[in-house]
Length: 105
Image (tube, rainbow, N blue to C red; front, side, top):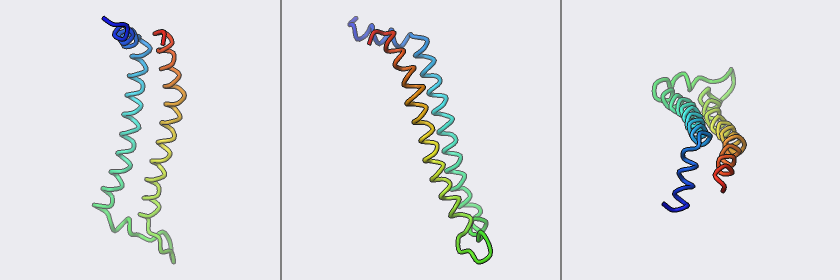
């Protein structure tokens, strides 16, 4: 076995690494599920309730309900990306650095 293999096994067997992977995977799944629900919810609304989305926002307005909802989906995408990146760059990166430090890297 090479030193590379030893380092790999040491990191892989580290309980902190296993915890980090589980936490990151769970968080990624939740964030992805939220995004899919919002996106496909909007698409399904377009497919099955066009009349409601076409409803004008108020008297004399040209904009329908669908426009701000579509912008909301885009804004939600940006917000959820910022939230994920912030957590990845702080908590996940810090934990990964600790695991590498313990492995002597």
